[in-house]
Length: 372
Image (cartoon, rainbow, N blue to C red; front, side, top):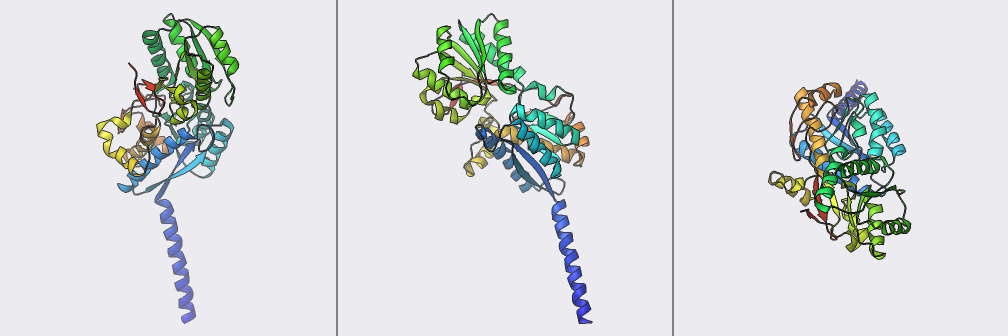
């Protein structure tokens, strides 16, 4: 009899353990955080990750979502399209239904094809290529503006404020860099600016002496660069070494403190278009303090846009009392979300109805001030 009781007790204990494990699993909702953890633009991935993880922590502290706690699962796509596809497939195979990411437009677009087919909701906090949301997908959203907005912001500033005599536009031949460069070109040429060079470089190149020599030969007095900071940092440094003194401008993909680490004093007074400084808004003071308490910087371009992405997903879950992505995406196109980046509304494409890029002057210490 005692032996039977022990067996029953053991069986009951096993059931209880299995039940507890199932309950724990049911009470955890995983969100994939996909972007570059490694590679030349991993600094931008850091911005996205700390923003999303802070949102997850804050939501969990407040009780979670519909009785569930959130867990962020980081996936590294290295800003590489092929690796992004592998990551997207792994996210699907891991049973995750919600993704904040990807970061680089060239990675986000192929990954989003997989998410749409599998009913996985994706909100990118950083990808600005209009092509991503131009395909009528239901599961694809973003919490940042488009190159078709950022390009004209830069182009109008160049034409109205800088008024160069001979302008060059250089890009890195990638979806993001070439897309923003094209939008700038269209804007400045429509306003009568003389674009004497429009050329691509190869991402990863280190020696830009021939490019700089050509810019000097053409008498270029202003250069717009479409791409990321590693290449522009080298172009700026090598331009200074060769006494090429034209003014430069770039998009949010160059607005990183590592740019100054590469270019040094040559990065002083670079013009950059960036999202507004959401960390400077008074209503975000407590949130910014929470980042500082963790020795994290809330000023990065994609920190609070990533925070907003997580918040929007969870607000949609609360509103629909569901984790069904089909119900969520319908609600998200009708709701207004109050976030650290402002009141957010989505259009039918999943783009923001309103987002303004701002022109800043970059400084050699990695800081920025509003351009005049």
